[in-house]
Image (cartoon, rainbow, N blue to C red; front, side):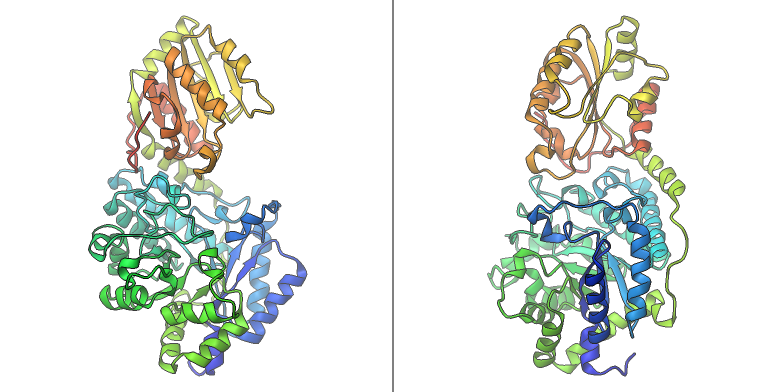
Length: 535
């Protein structure tokens, strides 16, 4: 490996994007890229319509039940084309399900952030199970977890992907997740250095700016990264965000900043592991340079070892060969080779071993559900419901899921009552539901928040928010929220609800656990991972 020519070594820095559901023509093009340029690895996405900034084009994402088998087959095919074994990477923050249908899904980081510190072993288990799932597919490198502290509720892109806003918990849980993956031989990655939490711009589309000083960043944003470095994190991803305080007052993306990567991360924080750029097709950087290859050179020159989602491979290789010192090329090459040695691919370990264990994933999800459920308001919820049922004054209302949901089915074993459901404005009539609910005194409401991202009020219709506001003011309402807790502050008069329980995920395991918790009036051990002002 060490005897490769300089041009072959530079090829190792490039990790272009590849797509599971791609055309044969595109697949052959990738094979040519692998053969001709000795690229170091690949980063998998589901399809071109879903990758990084491509969602802007509003292309429809076509779902494919065969995606898991397709990625396994493609990895074998691409490895066959490679003279140097490829390091295969993917974003699997909550498991392969982040990119691939019909694969185990684990809870979002914000849900894990609700766990008590004493249950950090469950975060380790999530990392371990995700690692085993990746290995089964032939993937060596998970571009996760986020070490971002989510201290800005208006953040459009981090939010539910962060463990929360407590720096200690973010640091501890990030390390546990990394240790779980490392246990099974999968590389991890802390992102997005120096911290993407306190921003309100989506870096896929524009350049967020952090105005903190180095002292402020060391106190907060950088804390989880420092803990990761102390625990020998395999790699750190640089975020597309500007930090003028670290960069001589300039609004340059961290990905292109020597002071941030070389001075702060390498020299001051003493990190000598792999540094990977965030996707170079993101608009915060991709539109900066007209000449092909210049962006790739600038990212490498700033201190990145791996150029993720590089779109100009041949031109980027030439630009680095022309401008970089041999010493710098050797440094990055050695880090990449060391990572490949660590996962065993240079000695013939192809990785595609093991099966996806849906049963184990389900049992783990149920245990996380038991320990993360969070009671915000409790006015003897269970007692209130059983008394109302006795007097025929109890009804159930499901929002954005039908009445056959697991939560209602679990409640119905002991708490049967009339049930109503709102699915969408096209298929459901809120007025007739409101009229039907008038004769009931107590209502158990399950709100299945439609989207995890905050855009357009998490896709909760204004009519639904208005409807809930009215119910809270006129009825005894017990609200169970299955979704992002950042949705709570947008619900008017939520403080007037008799009961409020945050459940985080809509998985069947979470719904079943919520039903059991309600019937048994058992303790809720979870804690909101973010500060929320309720209306």
